[in-house]
Image (cartoon, rainbow, N blue to C red):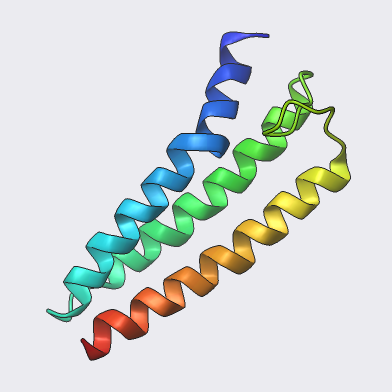
Length: 101
């Protein structure tokens, strides 16, 4: 396991989702003031970056899922699909919650 593969794994498994949650909360608060465009761009940028680090982790050679099982490209596609679906749904929920609360 190389240093770079450790960084990839920590990004897609922990730091990326944590950053998405923090941006979501901050964006929801700023939306009440009408200043959310920067947070929206940051959120989707980080979401794409997390997806990219998952791909790079798969290519790095370790090829494991979050549970430590051997990973395939099917697992990567499933992770990215779920990330984009649930991430977009969370953003939409925070958007409407922040707009109407």
